[in-house]
Length: 450
Image (cartoon, rainbow, N blue to C red; front, side, top):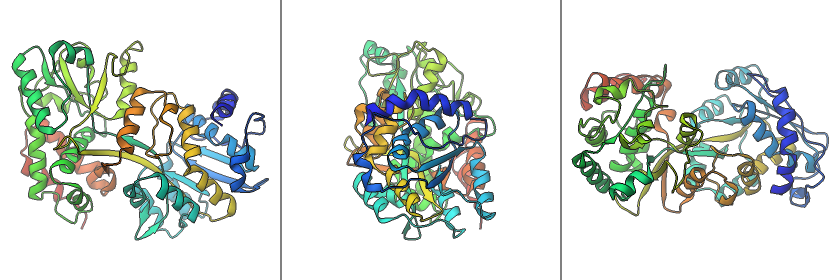
């Protein structure tokens, strides 16, 4: 199957990219896939002449990769999959739904939007085949994120892991440093690096234009999950406890042991205050020139290294690599991340069949085989050898580990006035103005909608 999909990739991508605009990419199913073995698609039935419309955020080459990933489904079942990608997806989807022009399927970038769409009464519950796939291939927490008020609506699709620390394997080896496996070991390593005086332990940056501050919210979420635990994390995100609860203050204070320590930051860039102004895209670069040892960033930061220098190798023996941000114990693995979800606005036979396919291990493997880097899933039916990027394989290992304590990025689940508003703003002030942990969290709490 993977071979047959690869055989049509060039043609599929070429045809699709020609039709892609900045806003959309409509297409129909592939009709020429002679190497495709269709036996595994018999379970979806004969869908000849039936059409499924799909709406999502993926455009350009990324959109073309998604279309190629379901080309065999279209060929074997006879279904027409009409895909449209848009940068304005999150704005336009509610408008379309309200106007009675909802797509058959929407791929939603976070659970908060799923809840908003479910509230319209237009989203239909996931069929049994989708629920069975999710029960089989994902951890329970992922199914929970696709569930609203007790009803399961949306299967997870892609995923991301944010809780990583980037470093130079050669620099660590030269200095005799080992990868920490607990939070205390990480602090001990930071102190040792500072004492050695060759370079500062950490570099960081949270500037991101209108979204300045968001990388700091990821740090806070990682600290809350580690030091307050998953249950408190969930209560905090849902505002069942106050944003400035003493346990959240303690977690932010723990973060300050690294990011507000002038002996530890901000390597090759400036002082603590410089974190607020340093672009997050560039903040890890001092690792390459030897002025910084560690930088916390998501798995998707891998693309930043090749942007800096296409010759840089990302891998265990490469120029840069990453290790999971440790938990409190060596056998714990708390992870903050993200993902997208497949919601349907129709329960027609062909729509349910396509939903089931997207929740299958077969689709996950097809998508992985078509993506050079930057895509991963928490679907444990994935053959990791189909992931060509070492970083994607590491992210998959973390996300699919049996004991992983995964939580969705908290700011994405909060009301936007907080998650994409006061949380960003106050974390910027935390560094730029030196505001205290308590005053920062008090200010955010005051903005939570009543």
